[in-house]
Length: 265
Image 1 (cartoon, rainbow, N blue to C red):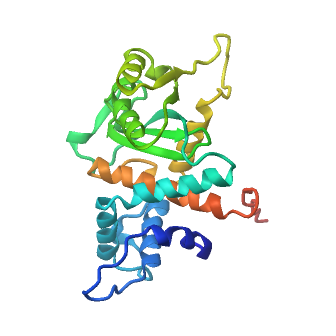
Image 2 (image 1 turned 30 degrees about the vertical axis):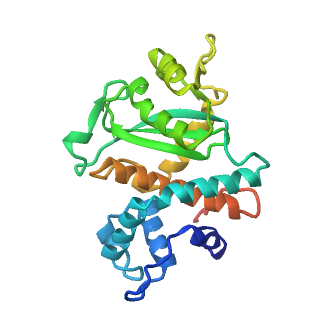
């Protein structure tokens, strides 16, 4: 994490407890260790020795999650990113999508399932983003959940925490979910369908934004599949990945460029 990125995050972290022993490890190193796990995909116990002990890092990870730190970080960074783009602080429209990922052997039978459509045994992630692709909320559950049923948790969370009252979705969310969202949440769920004459791959309006966000998230190797025993930990990992992405966006001084390919003769 760069100095500029750290300046964005440090004011949002909880203050250290007073009256006890001073903290041994800098907060910045704790955050760096968490992001190292998220980006590299390594187990907590395999953290490099130049970072704080994994027990300390995981303790902070759990304590901050219980205190709602990741939700606060996500919201504040999203507001800053929207301001940077000349938008209002809070979105009025969002986009929802789901992603089924394989579950590792650490995923318990009580929270895993089989997605018959994608032929995936594991978990399903439901995310809602704003219209620029910034993460708003996430819900993780067994892959056996149908989109129209599992989406209710994410939609309810977005309803309670943001002014989003119009959500775009694909055909998997059509049906009775549209009526439930309208009657219960007073929100419009618009189904964006692909053209009837479409053949092969084509970018579909609105839907491509959330699909791009899922691609950004799964660039973090910890999210290539689900390794967490508790789905709530999976949600926290996803939020940390989104926080890192927003911090990079806010501190970027120029357009993103792909690293040049090195050819060895």
